[in-house]
Amino acid sequence: MKIPITKPYLGEEEKRLVSEVIDTGWVTQGPRVAEFEEDFARYAGARYAIATTSCTTALHAALATSGVKAGDEVIVPSLSFIATANSVVHCGAIPVFVDINPDTCNIDVNKIEEAITNKTKVIMPVHQMGLPAEIDGIREIAERHSLRVIEDAACAIGSAYKGKKIGGHGNIVCFSFHPRKVITTGEGGMITTDDAELAARLRRFRHHGMSISDIERHKADKVMIESYHEIGYNYRMTDIQAAIGIVQLKRLFFILEKRRQIAEFYNKALSEIQHIRVPEIPDYIYHNYQSYWIEILDSSPVSRDILMEKLLAKAIATRRGIMAIHMEPCYKGFSRVPLPNTEKIAMNTLLLPLYPAMSIEEQSFVIDSIKEIMGYG
Image (cartoon, rainbow, N blue to C red):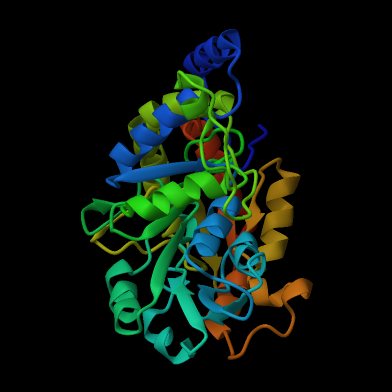
């Protein structure tokens, strides 16, 4: 039995719609992207959705159009994929790292305010592994200090905070459609916002700063000459990707239910092992389980890395838990304060296989293998 860390859930409907797009001859950003954006905004509960090439480019676009520039500071957790901090640096700004709450692996709201300076422009929480951060507390701090909130929701499509889906809380929110995420377009991202002016600017920004879109030009009954009032980027999603996204969004409810069933099976079985801590989910959170993580406690007879090696020897793929960005060589010296919770979680957690098509037999094999390695066999 060979078990990967994940598998995207794709089928014949995605193939059919992609084929239709190819037959039209319009394969770059066009009507299917617009359709996907409308569907996504409706699902997330936002007024506008703007498709991009990735969540990284979505974050960069959101920061840049929010006025973040060289010398500014953006508050972020260090416990995140490196793209979170990279998007800040791409603006010439400085990521200011804040420690996490070890129970949720999200930014510790109680530590945000002490990191704010007169250079701070944005608070950028990450909904780590799909588990929503404390949006209400973060927004309260942002409002007190006249800061903008940009949510890194790369992993969080389908998750909800206090009964409202991520994307629907009135902030700028950035999502990912990488194949390891809950739904995929191969590569791709999305920004949601309720701000009409910002949405319009984001659409120009992702299209080199061009004043008119290809669709507007195509529909026009006269020649239209574009102009460029700011320097933008090519962050356009293609209609081929959007076609996949349209179908994936329709599959989302089923995908979420399957992921949660698998996670519940893991929770029940692995919580019986005293050397492991399983995820703790607040009762006001709906978790999409984009990833399933466990923490290896100090009492364990094997370390996190040894466990991963032994599982790999059984053809079970795992991944280290979320990285601590400030511990990576390219961010050496960026941390202004100690980040003990971040470092502990980064060194002692791992991700287990989880995907909708995962069978009970495969999952049982993962669980039994962990028990055997830890001496519970």
